[in-house]
Image 1 (cartoon, rainbow, N blue to C red):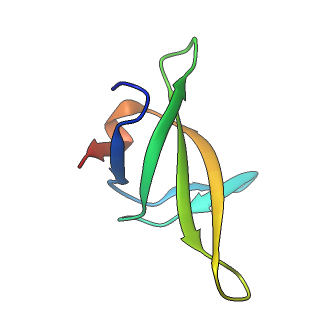
Image 2 (spheres, rainbow, N blue to C red):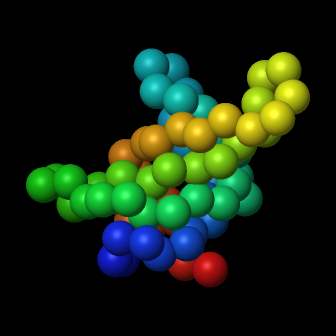
Image 3 (tube, one colour):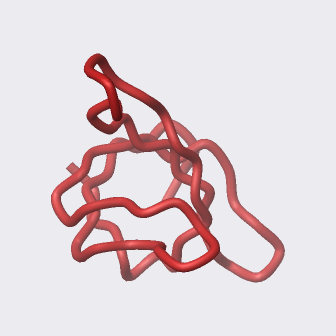
Length: 66
């Protein structure tokens, strides 16, 4: 996928030592890594209202283009 592609998380992502992203969250591809994973910035509901952005590295099969 190219930088700028809008995507949706296929399943829950992250957890443990990385940011959690729920299934269905929408984001934008912002880069790609040498290992083939995509850097995706997701906009999520904020902890105290509003929104927050998280950037996570995901395998291409964990997101689908919109």
